[in-house]
Image 1 (cartoon, rainbow, N blue to C red):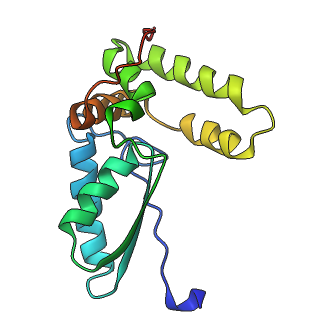
Image 2 (image 1 turned 135 degrees about the vertical axis):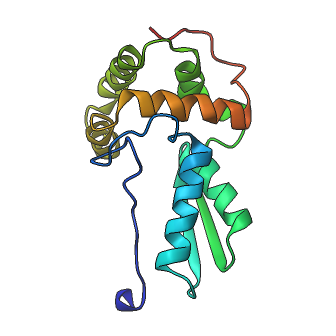
Length: 154
């Protein structure tokens, strides 16, 4: 069965080895980039999308625009105001590196024996702080600021 399907996990600019692209790393920019990539790599096949966290916003936009999407899964997607806690903090941050360190520290404190959080932390360490802030700010633009955010980022 696996031979009949392709799985693509893109390395978006600023997250992983793809370099950050100033002014081209918002959620909308990422959605356009992924849409173009999907159209090129899978022009005639059914598409299943999966979005996590802020990727949930991107996945929702893609599911609405792409033809042939047969399923969309949002895992802890930032789809409403109540989902924007860390992205809300990112939107208020002034210095990308300080927010990146703060956010990585918060995840580090929570990961202990939690294998998914350990993997998330490892990926987060590869994220360019500017891309992280740009995604956070554009996430808040897309869904609104979380009403429960009381603390301020560094």
